[in-house]
Length: 386
Image (cartoon, rainbow, N blue to C red):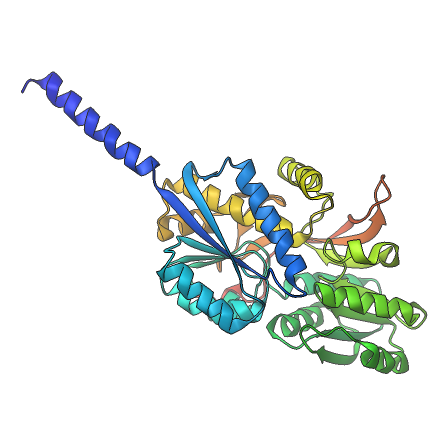
């Protein structure tokens, strides 16, 4: 066989192998809450994932892609069963999503030890940022303590003398109040933990009215926030205490709260008015497609898909170690700008002070009024040893 025939044969072999590689499909299992009262959150996340896949032409990093949505029903045992199915039956390459910290704690070991990449779109429990961190876990949101740390810092600098703190009794609730206290140095009048999923806060409001704190700090996500703020207003609590929130008055609750939420102050890493090309496109297309502003849950879900796309494109692979290495290096394109990562694979990012306002069309939304932290890392990274 002459050299030309050998070269042609080698070239044909190379093209055939390249064609097989290109035909690979990356499978993503996306777990969120799609039923019950918390389903409103999961629906926004699912919408955002589907929008991201539409923007990416159905591919991730140039590979054909399949996203499998599963409903965890906000139950740890269901989440564990679904994670097992995604790993063993569906053989997914990545599991993303997860709203609730107790569910993330429930599935973390089985997913990461199966050498499957686990990317959080929301939950950021403190143990997974510190001593129980794992190389196969990446956060595309924040560590739970950080957002209330920003609120604690702001309220401290604003001279707020006393605070009544309230959060649901689970991992994220405990992290939120711990983070708040890390930067707030005034008096904590009371530290109250309510039931996860609670809808009636009249008893707590009665106790709060008697305590008369200068301010009240709450973490009551999703429907809990809607109910709390409505009952707060119905009870005329603004005459008793000033309300400050994290993850309680946002794109999920604002369509229900509307004008009653105007002027409410919160802290967050994202806002619909963040002015960059990715966020502008995301917000405009989400509003056009789904008829309302996206929440930060939606933005973080969208960013999760962008992160997977970035990891596959830059590594040229769906191999867990290779994708993980790309994400750990940072410079991930997101709705928040180019996202940098800490040594524990949680983001280092800005935290903004936001106020609820009306936009030019009279729709209630939030806008950034200040930056509380720039390039803020979490308090647990020093305890993370891969």
